[in-house]
Length: 476
Image 1 (tube, rainbow, N blue to C red):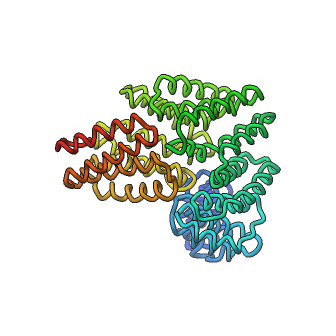
Image 2 (cartoon, rainbow, N blue to C red):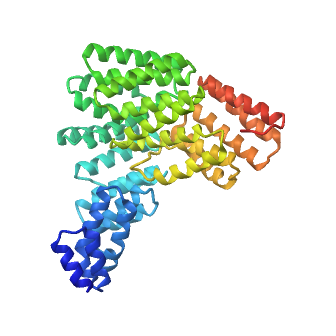
Image 3 (cartoon, rainbow, N blue to C red):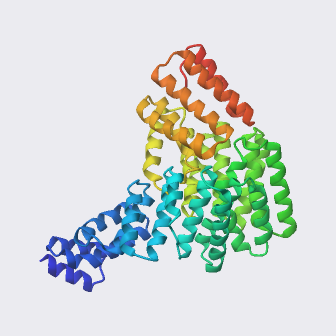
């Protein structure tokens, strides 16, 4: 019966997963193989990676060395952020042979960087010679990421990123252009020349508007390093002003929008609320006009943070919903989703149970490298740790704190994120019932570091928390 049903479904062009299921039920796993493979391809295309793995399991049980199935399995595990992706990529590379195996090993090296082992990735890269655009992009991003983490020579990342960017531009693939720009920005940051890199991209893309949108989208993550105490905010604002002015002169709408939003972000973090509101609203408008959903989502998310600070909860909720909708429409949501869900957690700070629920929902909704990146993850990890501590979930809070420690001290290495880590430790100390001197010391350290980073609003909050801890009041 199952064999007949499978044959009839195939004649009707039914879903491959349904056809495969009936062949498996019929005890004919080899007849199910092409349908399982088709179902896995569909699942990967739709980013349903858990489904892809479910389809691939019986396929690989039947044909353990199937090259495409092994590749899809490795990519699905990588997309879910599963450490097993590294071994899976090596198996897939062995099955693929040369030259395709080198492209898969380049992906393995990038996964290794994202999982916090840049030195191990560099060892692997020594024997990798990718040939495809995708493979070379992964190689460039792995080198650039390792350089940004202080584990590799920035010159190597620069050279690899330049080659990858040229290939991406030649291919015309917009997603590849974003990744190549990200690699180039990471390499520029590693060698201390991020300002010059942004400026060069403005001039190079000013006459190609659709390309400019994608190139500047690739800068989103790395240019956040202009913020959080890397430079005095007066310098950041002056740079953003100059960039926006030059962009207007060149008629480069994307550069103008980028500079306006960056200025608004710097003003918000520096505590100039009126100026921040004006520029973030204008940044959102400018991005909307040119179809720059990434920049618009970032501008709207920052406006939501401002609304939360001012107690306009309904407005903040609507803005975050809008930002999330915009982010889901882009192909680089992995730079946006963490910060949007992080802000959602902060929105519910007054209700620990609700904040914990939002945090748990976010943990299920934002998974793997396609939806999160090593740098942007800290914008979620910090509020998640605080939410868990406030809800009395100390073990969960400590898990997020460990991630905060790595992200702050190894990945980001910026003054305001050191301060945020101190604040997290203060909340966990309070949740553990530690001596009030210990809790007070963490909040006081956070306040001092926020002051040093130029974040007066964050510093004032931590100063209040230190006062509550010192007097024995409930911290929250």
